[in-house]
Image: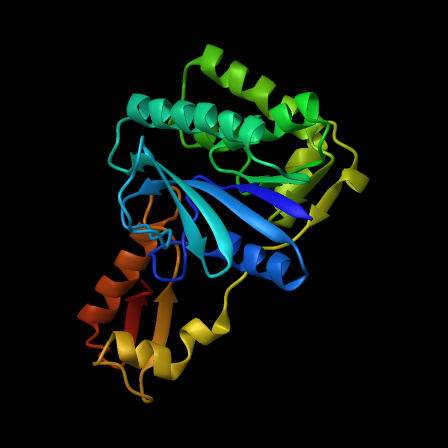
Length: 259
């Protein structure tokens, strides 16, 4: 069976971000599926491809994953409107993939919410099953962070959210809170599967951490911040903690960021 997997920020373990989609793809391959991953470039990411782009696209096999990468370089430093442009371009290119690539099922993972649009097209025009994985609740998250305040844009995002939820055959929530948020939108619980986010503990072994930071030894107590350094991630708490430890001269406590 052929899985067409949409994740705009896909990367391999050689990158600097999350590798959930890489791990999911590897699990699908091990189970006998063929996986085509559709993604785009982004700052500090690593899709495993390094050959030149041809007509803003490049393609190749990466650890048995057929990766299609669009030349749409995304960065957290982009303005709000620049990000919207990248999201729209990725969506349009992805819809084109729906009509060109052979597949049996579509798996799309947010964010952004727009990654669900190719799945909607697959369900409507190709009559193929669509699974949608929700990593963040939109537009609840940007509304709570006051990133988006325009009521018209928030309203349109709310409509798109509901269409994605109702179009999908199955929904995957990454946390109990996300699952509850989906249910509050009127989606039946039996349609939602909870597959919690997690960590590969091998990344945090003493050997792995020591290789990345020579100042770490077995006598250190390690506090690891392994998340994204973004506005939604509370990094200021980690920095405040580091400052307190520094003032108290607690040199055996190390706070590190895994890359």
